[in-house]
Image (cartoon, rainbow, N blue to C red):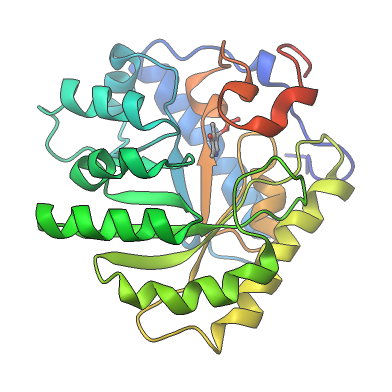
Length: 270
Ligand SMILES: *Cc1c(COP(=O)(O)O)cnc(C)c1O
């Protein structure tokens, strides 16, 4: 398979066909796993060191059940209300777990504390505190990733890289949060030369912060890469890739619904 990462990324979202059967999901999952393995091979990494997180946002319960039947046991959702609705509807699948990967307001922390097993977009102490408080009353713990803004786009969520060190120092104060690592969204561009530096920045930040990370704050994980750019992210050290459209099919929803930076990418742009 030729490397898509040489000059331009295939950000051909509109061209991912909809998955409508268990076979479609099996095929798409296998194709993504193959792309993961090829990216790993290029840089001498073990494919087992990369976790694929299927992202199911905007797709309905019937499609999520097909994904489950094809083997998915952890699904990523960007919005809390949508995730909670799906969690309730699919409570019969007792081994299905949920990862919330989008920005969280403190008034939604209670829901996340109740049903999520992972939260990837931690970027404020207020949210950390509220999650910790709610988790204690639920008798639960939560895996969390600290979201970092590596693209420098003002409207993007996440801490500035220079704020992360100090932020991490405060996290042992919230014992219900199990800090696993860092998460980022790269710049949205089909130009690898502009996307790759975002991933490099997250890896180098992790490297710098590791020595001084407080006890109990783990920085092993780097969650970076989506359908259009996960191979580049893997080449730069991703341990978790969050992949929606390459598994479920193209989304009808514009990306701007999920994050404020996508205004420059109207629907059908790529
Ligand atoms: C939707 C989403 C993804 C996956 O994007 P795809 O283009 O569907 O692969 C990854 N990360 C976050 C935070 C998302 O909201």
